[in-house]
Length: 371
Image 1 (tube, one colour):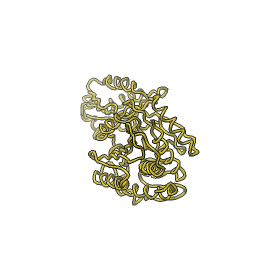
Image 2 (tube, rainbow, N blue to C red; image 1 turned 60 degrees about the horizontal axis):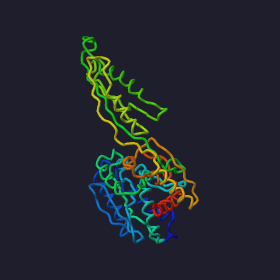
Image 3 (tube, rainbow, N blue to C red; image 1 turned 90 degrees about the horizontal axis):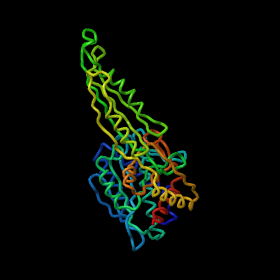
Image 4 (cartoon, helix red, strand yellow; image 1 turned 90 degrees about the vertical axis):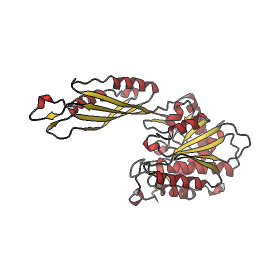
């Protein structure tokens, strides 16, 4: 590919190929097919290997002396079930590319491939090895990929996360909240609601009181949010409920907040001493806190973007990514380097076509500029 061939239609063809290869998180066969397609699309540009269901590709780039490595981090799985293309087909319309997974985050993978092609075409020396790691379970909690991500990160001088940027201006992400997941189960005493009402101890009533306490753990001033998202309990209206549970989402901006919230969950006590409580879960993704290393990496990206006429901004978000794991290890991590668009996980998922080229150019220049 010559530099002149870096056009929206050329890039869009690869994005379409990736989007039309459906890869839901819960379908190992389709994820395997997607990873094979992605590796094949690189041809001789990189050496790829599988690690379980995940993919690692080392690019062949100009420059003789290479010290250390820079890792681009992405995922190939999507939240969309197999067959979504039938009702939500890939299309190009109204200055956008549409389709399941186009924003989150198949376009980002395509952008990075083309960015590396630019470096080769322009014969720009890259002072480090460049790895692309594509995980297969990011959307479901990264349970099998986390160890690999952390292993790769420890060998890296910087991590570039190919998740979409924030909003329709494509702000990069220099901070992300940590994510926790708790379940609170209540065991009560069942009885007939009409005949033996006083002999029962309602797990539903107990849980309702506990939910009020749990919701009170939210501290918006500190950026801490606690959401009892689902509730289940009881069997019939004429039975005093024997069991009930709630599934709770926790978001924290600082790692030290996790221990404080953990203590609050573990200190929960029954209002009705005939009931018992069971609390499970905890922190899943540590927060990505903005460090000096992350700030320095953002400044490099900002200079790279300015060279192609873009005033790049930064943002913080409540959502998590695999970049949370790498930042928590102290590795400079810059997130949101993928596509610019909206509608992740929604029917209007799409990316802006007029932001394709500048994102690729920024990625290429950033990779070459990292010392």
